[in-house]
Image (cartoon, rainbow, N blue to C red; front, top):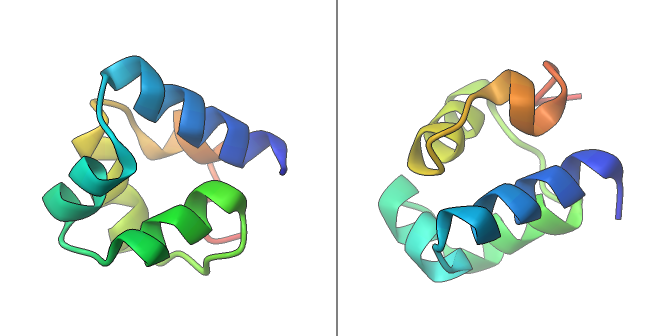
Length: 69
């Protein structure tokens, strides 16, 4: 697991939300959200922004400023 995915998971856990809660709030399948946490999902900027908002964070904090890289 890469650094960015560790940050995403830690931020989600700190928010008190489950993977399912974040996926539902963002409007995506839980399996897709899990891929993002494991570093295997290809994100779009729009999805990255929606995830960041759901976690009360920002793209720069979660993905070191590069959500689609």
